[in-house]
Image 1 (tube, rainbow, N blue to C red):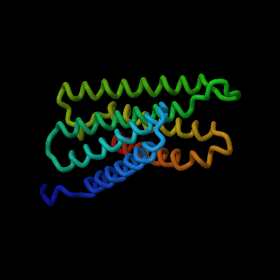
Image 2: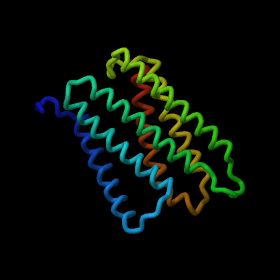
Image 3: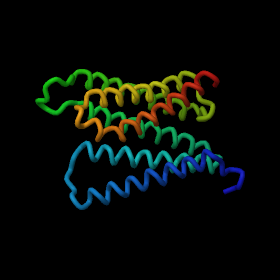
Image 4: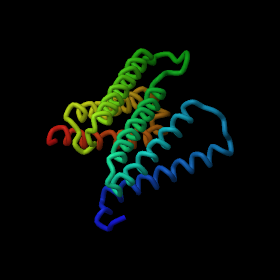
Length: 196
């Protein structure tokens, strides 16, 4: 790797890969002693693994000059978003028989999240098929990608709002962490869409 290729973006992706890898290793080690299958737990582990793959792919993309790495990072980013949105939708769904919780809202937001992810996947497939390089992203693609973090912020807010008072303190680190990621991505995609 050339010295000029090591920049702040590469360092950030490597730091994200180390952090996600450490979190994934800790959660797997912790849960290995008392393993029980839980869909939410498996989905969270898959989302952390997808975030790790995205961070490794981003570091690879910064270190290489190939177009394929850019497409791989975009695909990993969509996978990461789809899994984190699925985690939030699953957290938003009320348990069976829980009074006072709005299940239709969770279903509608889940359908919206699924629709946005499918549209973004189709847009990425179109870009790969037509050879549109990732940094030369079109404005409609960037606006579509802007919808994912906005929906993520809405879902994080709804999860936090619908939790009971005793569970809010337990969920605060997860909700604040995901909201920070989504807020940064809103800024990133909004600036890219506005300024091209």
